[in-house]
Image 1 (cartoon, rainbow, N blue to C red):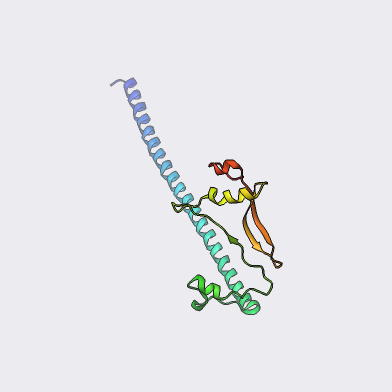
Image 2: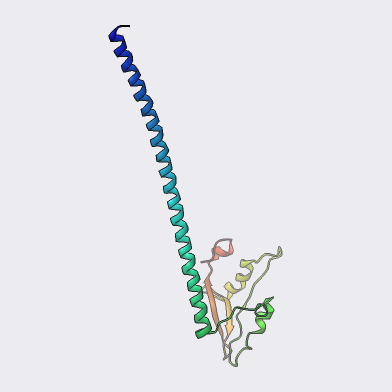
Length: 167
């Protein structure tokens, strides 16, 4: 072998060793980088856990403080099973009877067509004949002196009788 070939072979061997070391170093850097990413993720998870525990600690401390205030100042207690109602009738049993001079409840009138559905035109037709201003009382209540007081009024046009809408 000539000296030039040896020198070239030496450079090729050195270059191959350098490439091998570069690949090994690159793999080592990637391994360290992945460890850093894993450590950062774990740090974030631990910070979230710490925040959760701090929130829970503050909540429990607030509950203890509220319980202490309740014992000392307010005296509230949790509802028992006997305090719950089973039906609307039990709730109505707690109401007071109407006081003297209370107006009577509002009563609503309705008309039902032969098919069983409310018929607005049949309800309104007799009222339109009596009222020139087309104002119809849909609900009324008796006052103390016997006069009727309108609770709700509506203007109904003649188009409403033919299937139009109510204004």
